[in-house]
Image 1 (tube, one colour):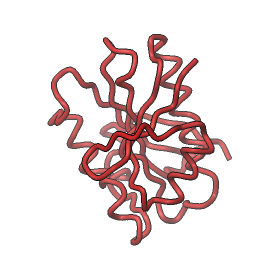
Image 2: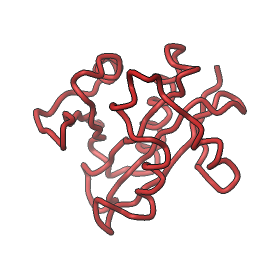
Image 3: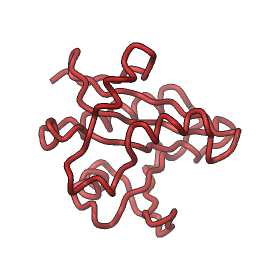
Image 4: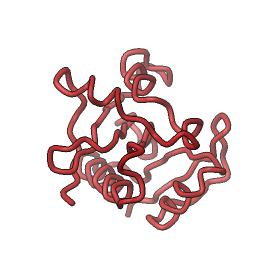
Length: 153
């Protein structure tokens, strides 16, 4: 396995749009199209920057993840839209991609003191992954999702 992130561009956006989660997970994560729309629409405000990535194993696209941030803060570094295509779920791609994303954020933003994400309580697999990675529930709720945080030392 050689997992790495590549920005979503005019060369790979159509392939990214074809990524789908398993039927039982559809309500847990926005489609890639919705995530890409956020880059343009900026629903969280003009100060938030959205950076969409395709997740690859060598040259094979296996998923999608997006980073949203406000570089003027220490705690507004978010992972969202994170999904592994149904064909590749359960093979370790989620953990590898999460590691790559955390590494990318912490290398690019030295002032980052915590990384946040949201997750539905019913998304047991995601909750287990995030917990095993060091994310902790904050007790806050955003919409219908719990907010989790990964403290950065």
